Image 1 (cartoon, rainbow, N blue to C red):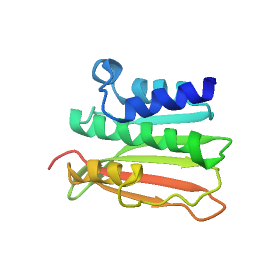
Image 2 (tube, rainbow, N blue to C red):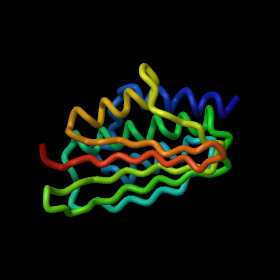
Image 3 (spheres, rainbow, N blue to C red):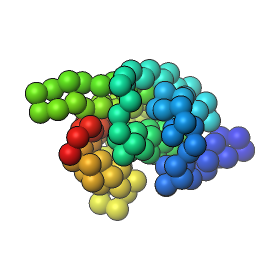
Image 4 (cartoon, helix red, strand yellow):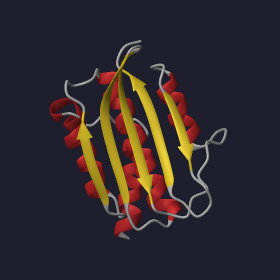
Length: 149
């Protein structure tokens, strides 16, 4: 029952509730909070100084939240990793979000699916999301989110 509750809470968060911890304490605290609620153990590593714009933070948060929900529900994974870092590129700064699990693989961006919605959310700030998930795993969900648009 605890796993079902955790998945339900993660899904609610991923659907649009902007958590106070994100606004107050930033991505590291907010993503650590999501990871603590996951029934699958999650290692979180965040390095995004200086703090990115709120739209980038919220997009990153929802990508991680939905990804962790999918991992708990579908992946049959024993562990997951969330890495978020900042990259300086000639075209501008990016925040890169990468969620990896050791599950069964087979995840894909399908029309009308949760991952498609996340890709659409990333696109609203000119971001790009990719999913690499061969059968047998691992699955890697990556979003490159520009800090200016």
